Image (cartoon, rainbow, N blue to C red; front, top):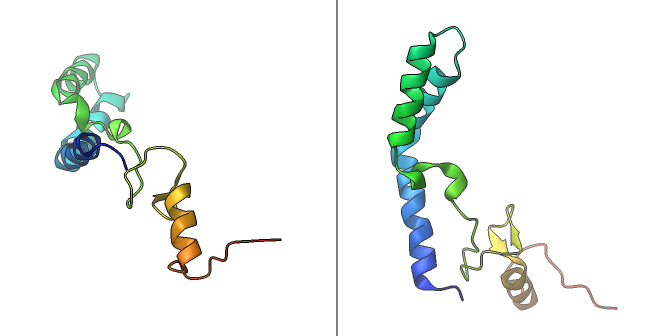
Length: 101
């Protein structure tokens, strides 16, 4: 199980990303629009830099929904390989059969 503080920090980042996503998208559109003047684009970049760092979606870490583990994460299932194996062995994931030979 991951540290509670790490999990909570990541959840706070998710909330910030959601909160600033619209503003961030608008500013990026202006900053990357080459038909705008250099001054407008530069002003948009400065406004973008004023946003909180944790409002950037790249700061979010994929974590297992069950254990909070940050590594060996399967996007499709939203969990780590260890949690997947445990739940699969218990028969809690439909269609998953643990192989043995």
